[in-house]
Image (cartoon, rainbow, N blue to C red):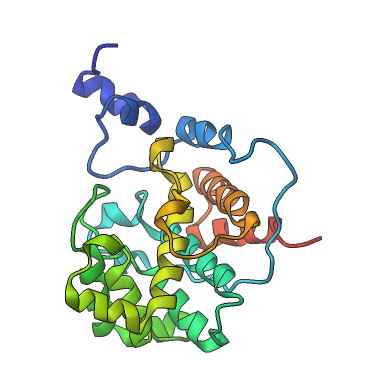
Length: 249
């Protein structure tokens, strides 16, 4: 197959661009790619997953992002909002009280807010952590919670593989292990939004045991929120619709 010309690439859906190695720096999910994702539900078609318990929706403000185009991209507002939900769902049974969970979720909503592009962008976790320490009032006003020190540490380490930790990062990890591993797991579960299955969740890289329901629910959360966004609703309403659809009957 010939590589697409730049003009062709502008018209190709993300999953086709990923297949030929031509993804742009900023990637916005399109309908053909979302349909491609929906057709690849983990485990195949089956019963609709349900939220194991309620989660507070926390949707980051687009103005918090380093670049306007990043707020609408694959690492933008909806990604942060879904990770904030997933970290709340995963936190059950890990000994964190409600305030600690919501402080971590507030930080999780902003964990990619300092990204400059949708590529690897080394250091974006540290930049987001620094932003969180400078803007506690913004989080408090929007979410009713500030990012705690353990939540800031989790954001700083979320993009660094365990094997690549520096001695200082190892120290921070051992001090805040649960928060770091919860955020890493929640972030990984939202990888179903990415336009190639080779980038989807790899549970072997995580330090937490992932519940059986989590993969199906994370996939459905991506499909439902992104479908609503493509239909023209706001990010906050897209999340609301998805959470309502996933409520236990």
